[in-house]
Structures are given as structure tokens and as C-alpha cells.
Image (cartoon, rainbow, N blue to C red; front, side):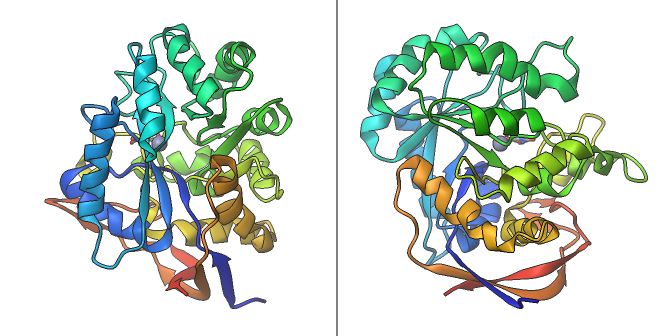
Length: 347
Ligand code: NCD
Ligand code: ZN
């Protein structure tokens, strides 16, 4: 049994860094393990312009620990009113790698998202022309649709028609959670890929109710049944280049999670690679981790692969019960449980 794992340094293709004290608390975790990350724009207020993205990027760079080797890849938040010229500015900036589509009301800080996909057609037309990637939170928001069916309904009712309308638009289907999404991404025509989180590889929806209500396992899209988890694990470990790493690490203060209306989001930046290693090893596929974590993301985004390496060692350790976050505390996913692999630095 292998005791050490060397990987080309990975990137995180879906990450929430927030701002202020939260940013300062969480950024060192990501910057240690990952060389780059696609930074989500769902701040309050959202990052809707190139100017706002430039300022946010500067705050991230200023919050980096001394000596860190990390590059934030910025995104724009697509709204009903995003102008085609704003898309051209974003693309010309050189630091914006994608535009994020949130259906209004789908998740945390998505109120400014699209109320109908057709409102974004002028912006999408230009993205298609420029080859700028569209990252999609793929869930239907109609309250009549069961929360466990929202991803599938989004594919059938919105994603397929959208991709018929814009066949050359480059799409990342974010944090997929179902066999339906994995099948769609594997088979669909055109330029499409998907990110998969560690938590959707490791847990099914039972984790939300294990001995009581477990708010730290609540995220959106919500965990699904075991057959879906197995389909995601098969996709991630298949070596298919359309599936790559995106943690969706989403910090919320402890009190905001442990509440009568707890926020959606799991915090995994602290132990991201260890969680993925655990999932891949459970499938006997540790040899496929490097493609998923380090190659297929940059290949899709047309960026160079990283040239340094990271090392993981087989050395069981316990995930801390909590972490400091400004005046608050932050509960990492699977707090208090053991992991078999430990991140041992960049080599
Ligand atoms: C994310 C957040 O907290 O910003 N929450 C989550 O459950 N994943 C938003 C998102 O990516 O849906
Ligand atoms: Zn997210």
C-alpha cells in the first residue's frame, strides 16, 4: 500500500472566499494546497463588473500570507442586466476566466441572479463569440419542484435548450450531484465539463440526518441518494477529462449554520485534497486523482498545467472541531473525524 502520493499541484475550479475577516481566515487554507482557484462572485453586493472584480482580486492578493504562491481566477456574476460590453471588458481584462450564472433564488446570495435565461441572451452571445466560459449553478428554482429533482429538471428544461441556442458556448456545469448530470456531461455535444465536490463524492443525503439534523452537511445542491453518489464517484475516477475538481468550499460562521434557518455551504478548503484522496482511494483509483485534480481543469480553461508538485502522506489525523474566523468560528466538514491522508506541502 502506497504511503506517499505525489501530484502535480492542483487547482480549485469552484471556490467561495468571501471578503474581510472571513477571506483572511480561509484564504491561507486554499493558497497552501492549490495554485489557482476560480473565485465565485456571490458577495454582497455581487461582483457584477470588471471593475468590481479587479478590486476584489486586489483584496484577495492583499490577504495572501507572505510567500504564498497562489493566483485567484476571477468571475463575473451574470444578472438580467449584464451588458455585452461588460462581457467584452471582462474578457479583455485577462484576469476574469468565467461568468457565473445563478438562477435567482437558487442558493446563497443568488437574489441578483437571472430571473429568466433569455434575459442573458445578449451577454451569452458575446461569451460564445469570445470563448469565455459560463459556469452554471444548475438547479431549477420553481418551488413546486422537489429539492432533490432540481438538478435534473434544470438539465431538461433549461440547460439543453440553452445549449441548443448557443451550441459553441463553453460551459462548466458546477458541483454536479446526480447520475443524470454526470450522464449528460459525459454524452453531450459541444464544449462542456463539470466540477465535482469532495462532499458529494463522500456522502449521500443520509449524512444530513445521521442521529439528528446535521447543518454542517447542508449545501446546495443538496446531497442526493447513494446511487447518485456512486455515479459521481464513477465519473470522477473514470479519467474522463470532462470531470474535474471544484471544492465549492463555502464558509459560513458557525451561528449562521446552526440556526433555525441554517445557511447552505460546506467548508472543505482546510482539508480539500485529503478528502478527495479519501474518496478516490475508496474507489481504488488513487492513480486517477492527478488527472482530476491537476490536469483536466487547466486543459478545459485553456491555461497551462502547474509545474510544481504537492505531496500527501498516509498519516491519520483528526479534522479539528472548529477553526477561528474573525470574531466567529467555522466548522470544517466532517469535524472531529479521521482522515487517512495528510497534505505534506509543495515540493
Ligand atoms: C454556496 C455559498 O455559500 O456561497 N453554498 C453552497 O451550499 N454551495 C453557494 C453555491 O455554490 O451554491
Ligand atoms: Zn459554490
